[in-house]
Amino acid sequence: MKRILFLLFILTFITPAPAQAAGNSIWIASPANRNYVGEIINKDFEKSLAPTGDLGKLIFQPVARPRTWIMDAALLEDVQYLITKNSTIATNWLTQLKKESRGDTIYATAYGNPDVIYLNSLAPTELNFYYIVGLQHLQAVLLKNVLSEKGSGYAWRRAKIDNDLRQFFNNSRQEFSLISTAVNPKEVETDRARIAQLFSPQLDGAQRNELLKDYRVGQSNVIKKLRIVSGRYQITTSNEKIPVTLVNDFNSPVKVDLYFTPLNNRVTFPQYRQITLNAKSKIQVSVPIKTIAAGDTTVIARFENGKGKVIGTKGIIELSSTIISPAVSRFTTGAGLLLILAAVAQSVRRVRKSRAEK
Image 1 (cartoon, rainbow, N blue to C red):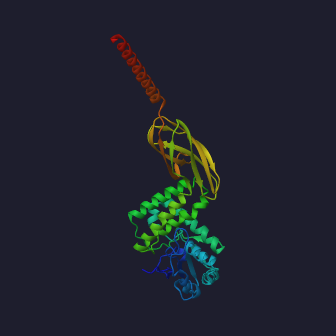
Image 2: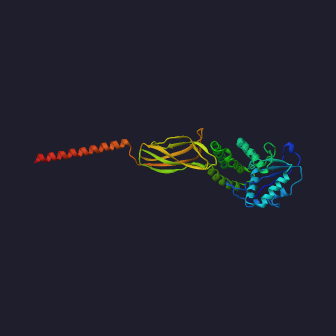
Image 3: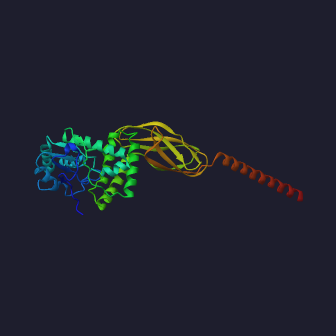
């Protein structure tokens, strides 16, 4: 189905708050026009901004005052993105929007214009975050103060949410909450808020599923910015050092604890507290390990924040040890000596017996 940019003009069919009871309400919202990394996925988006397009008609042919605007900052940021790509259509649209809405009441929706009724029951704290981001980002685009749509009575219709999306949402919320304890929260703010677009009532099932696939990859790549590089090592001595690479691709420094968990008792590892990783950095730590017994060992390397919570992406370290432990070495050496002595003794007996027979 052709992605339809949504800009709904509603008269008083929506029951507004008493202060907005008179006049017309103009909704400016749409399904996501960009993927997780910010690239345009709706090919008709720019066309819809033209004076004859769905979005353009309400801006270039506005209804008479009094009127109230309800805007989604995510949509306006999509327009700004087109402007950075030298789109004259997008530039004219945003200029006209600012002109026509001057002096009118403007409300900011929760970022991404999600199903607020559903999210309020699922995660009210996260919904409040979406409202805050929606308000702040809209003010940044319009360069003026606006009101929050929260509690205004301008609620949009319901979305169809399945278990797959709920699970992704819960996992993402936890991951972003944890990574924000080490990274500047502002750096992942938009990534975290973008998840709200998956709850847009304007998405059909196919659109939502495609967007969810893209967001899974995008969210995972954000978390992987703080990671431990996996590796495989051959161990030949009891005490050895292995190089472990730590990466911080965020724009802010982080302070983390580094822990190693072997999945058997063949090796022991040290633990590191309060390692500082500078912004956009990659460092190598020389980790001393002690081998107790030969064989293969898998080690899980992880970052933790100051509260003992795992953050970032874990590393898998595979060790293959071919050393012989001291105890085994002593046993082997002793056994070898006994064999030599036994052979000497047998030779002596043979010589004596030979002489006796003569």
